[in-house]
Image (cartoon, rainbow, N blue to C red; front, side):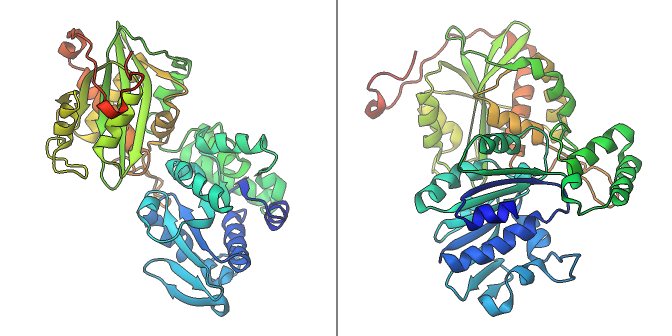
Length: 428
């Protein structure tokens, strides 16, 4: 009721960290139904992946009532039409509702949302918020973030920020707070987790799911151990103008492009920056690279970069070389090989905590999926918002593991900015 009252009184930003089976999505769906009749507009319900949206929301059945959640929140009497293929509803009021994924929000056409629920925010692509926040601010829209914790990632930070914002609503509700589950039920759930995962891990996951603990690492996280041990090496890491900055890319067209920036020092790697984007032309990335005022060294691209156009007639490698970057190609390797190389490299890596924050979030959330029935991990990591940064990091590990790459000494090069952008100078 406190969350509902906040929204009913005109609140526009709610962060709801509620335990598993607490009714997070019930509140989000029913509030959307109310809002769609108070203001005509577009409303989105966003899951981490578009592929999971149909199962998790559109076809999901409320176990308490036996009815589909969509039909409970949006009964036929208030709908004008419904499209199961597109998971789309048009209401009698003229408003529309659609279930989407944080991995495809930028591909949707039509009017932008005036109301948006991020379901399972901790597992969603944080770039969605950065993209949509100014749209909601401009049109006076509202947003709800609901989730259970997944380590201290972007969901933890947005919760803390909301706690400090007098205009926002932030609430953490554990299973002890709500009383939805009895002590006997909770004891049984804890016993099940311990049976499936062992004493330490099972207790940690129970604390995460039902006590809303942010201390538990992401289940199936590929680099959990290595990043935990790297905690003291995640700090301010300044750019050293006397050393070139090497770039390591993973390329995408419809999905994400990711770039890590690293400087090499004796016996260590200094990762000083990270850049990502979705649906951009390579020229846009070149402008962003130039604006950072680094002196660049080698620009490492995936093995297929000489065939990758990225929305242009010339390949990525050709466009980068035309802009003055020295491109090199990473040897083609398997995902497992890149993961093992990255694990060996991580003990030697220092990360700048501020500029690499988004990339580090992705590395922490790069994970194997877990089969809920067998409790077995997948053979390869899940392909989601975190995988592109992780792939680029794996390419870096492959590119740098050969001794000759460590020992090569090249003069630092300056990449000349376009004349129209040269006022004031780009490079140090």
